[in-house]
Image 1: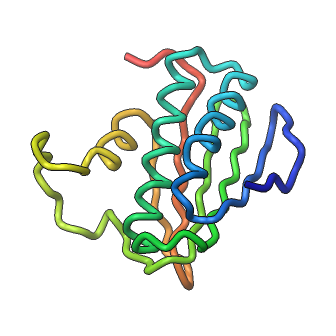
Image 2: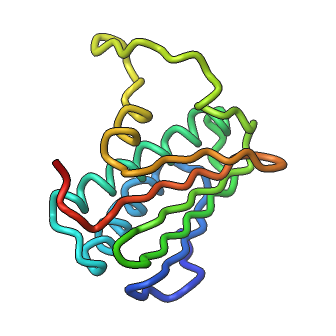
Length: 144
């Protein structure tokens, strides 16, 4: 896993291959970055979980399990908001345009989008040519 810019409290950028082995280290780096930005332990865990689920979905759905495709994550903290952008060059399917499926806890999968929508303050999918740009925002404020 390569880091293309040095860590700072304001902006980090990570380029990884779509290998599932990169998900946990990326999650830990984003949790550490969120902590540097002032988020509490619970919020850091929630942000890390959302990054984990988003990248897993890219690998599973946009890249159909391919382990050698690029994923670019950029995180910027502009108080009070942490904005995480995740770019892929996959099939470009926009999850917002798919029919909403009823969550079934007995079936595998299906929690990624649920986590993003519940734990982030804003989630936007922006189709690219090719691929998708996901932008998630979490504010540094108390949540209900």
